[in-house]
Length: 266
Image (cartoon, rainbow, N blue to C red):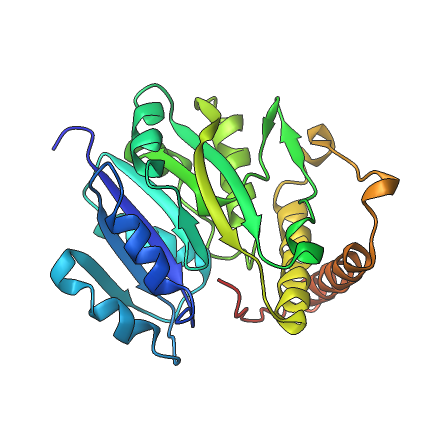
């Protein structure tokens, strides 16, 4: 079907959030097939997804990281457009329709992500990086691509623990693909509820940033960074920064000693 779209989700132990996500996707104003790639959940996530089989949801289970899981989802998909979101996200009801509308004129579309939850965590903004005027740090929990553009980019790099979406954005822009940021494609993101989960996520984000830097070292100095402002610093900001720094250092050391850990982040 012309201009068809599939929604691809990678999950790991998202039983707390997955039902709300699937309900929101099945209520979209533009009908899409939903493909869930589960990385080996042990908390009942797969059982919840199976309860949606009669409503057209597909489940594929394989132990894998986030990037590889998304690539698997695209291989399963046959649609013209592939849309990505995460297990702890809730897209606005017109999200898919808005994505498809913009993908008719662009190769890559990233939307507006609004974090909700504890104010001390939800209010923390990401450290933005721009390449040729496009914010490449826009997350893949709110991303869509033309299928041929995704394949042309080579998909997500499965070797990256995190930052695989930043890496894909950089490649898309460097190849001259039409990248667009849409403020009307809205996804709500549920912030980590536990302090431990928040710190773990920050650690792995830092780990992925070093991998990203090494892979893109030729153009790293060409990237523009939106540095933090003094008024944005808080205790949670400092803790996130410190955890990310530790992850960055561990990634650097693991590279030197050729270690390749498995992340639990999805």
